[in-house]
Image 1 (cartoon, rainbow, N blue to C red):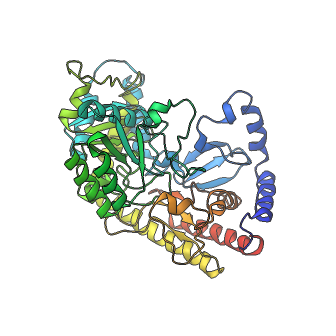
Image 2 (cartoon, rainbow, N blue to C red):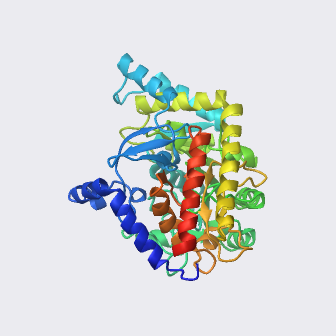
Image 3 (tube, rainbow, N blue to C red):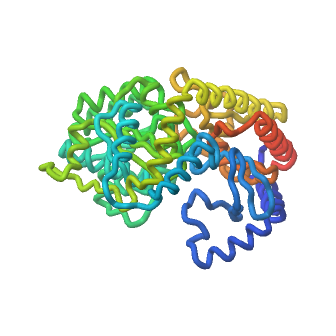
Length: 463
């Protein structure tokens, strides 16, 4: 692995991928003529081109070239029960048969029923629905600014809160580290109001609050970095975040779009024993349908009320609280709460076996590879994990900086070569691995470990 640009390895992977997925190549060429880059989300695009699916069921998807692929992307990590689970399918069919399938734009009982269900599960006083994580985090920050009368937004490097211009800084590593805004079109004034701190760095967090605490409106971060290797917050960092925001009068916003209902039938905040001022939930709570919520303190969320003096215009969107989304969300959350003692221990056990197996496969080939997602004393052995390739045996990342530094980790292997290599074995991963679902079977895990072994063998020969 001395040749770290892996030119020979990548050339071979690109060649073999093109040979294995020819129909997807033709489809991509056609779709690019009407869709920007041929897709509707950047996460669905990779080089040389994405494969195109025709069906999805359980742990697997089927593509137009006829491959049955074990999937760890699972609907942007939303499908904790796998693709198209019966409990969701039946709920949607029942709604359509009742004649409630399309948006009415009028209040209905199920909206309040699901809000009560969610509030009870996560310990929130108020809930308001919207349709995308980007909107939820944007509204949460707007509420925090209105409530505190302050403008500065603090976030962590590598934290992804959607394409929300109020937090679109420090998402990915650039020439400036994690201090750049990841999009054009964001005014300089907005960029200057976003502060970025290192994840799990308590000393730097204290320093920031000592110098700017009276100007910080909110501190927003994910309990586990969804776009940066699934690195979890340490207990100390979470505790300090809560204490510092309270001390300086800022709001703590936990973005649980990914982590909500992933580790237990609530937010990860329950496992950390911390109560944020606001939380955002999405993905799993929608059961695969577009349903997102901002939940938290009544005195903060009531600023969205029409009668509020310092009103925040939080309207959610035309399709907020869509009947089918509510039906799917209610079915999913009720199922997870009723089966909490079955679903989560099973996911944890399968994850432990898979992660240990992956590390063993690479070790047997003389390759240093490790997995995030192991139990950290707070979060259990997680169904969110990533494989990374440290350049030193003693390197264990605790932040996005640690994981993306080319002097510490082989990023090309993690983000590019591994994905293509596994797709040649009919396994689809995202950011090194992705999300395990309840639908992944022991047979699936055996196939996945065999796929990793095939990649490790190729890497040892060609890497």
